[in-house]
Length: 233
Image (cartoon, rainbow, N blue to C red; front, top):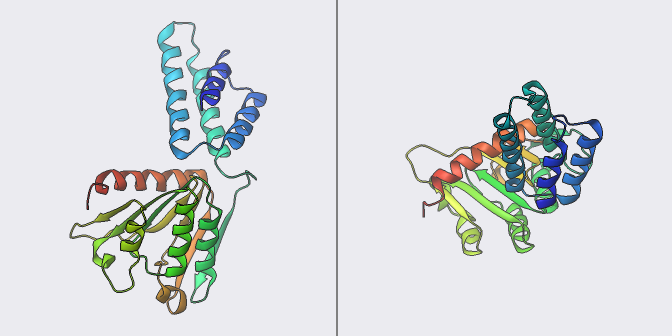
């Protein structure tokens, strides 16, 4: 992280982000693969650098600094889309195994973090992948709703017992989301409940994409919910 933070400062020397500097920053991000918190730290540092530069004296070029900041934010977004850097979007539908396989594939590929926000989780085939990720050191967090927490077949208690951090919405309303964010770069979202019924019987869907803007919005929603619910037993 220190090298990435230093690189940001170096690129601001002439109040502009050249194409070579942008490519170098993207490459450094892909090689370092910082966690989501690291990306937020880099973004905050970029804004701090611009504020400091503007406050330092009248020779600062506000338009140039804005363009530099826009270039850095774009580089951070490109650097988080995965090693290919190519946009990807696909849809899966049930009944049938397609939605399940899309979820399993992303959980198996996770290397740093998984944030899961689902109304219910009772499909052992998904739970097994969550536990496997947890055991290999992936930082997993789960948000769910109290209405289904103690249903027959619910795996929330088992996940909590295994050491996976779980927060539960115990309000009268429902936490009815069904999405997951993997490595801060991939979004799984759709109507699909993480249950066997959804796989075998229901008309459901899962969309997988690595669009940085969508990932960022869903991550912000997850973080807001986690901040509000994480102390709920």
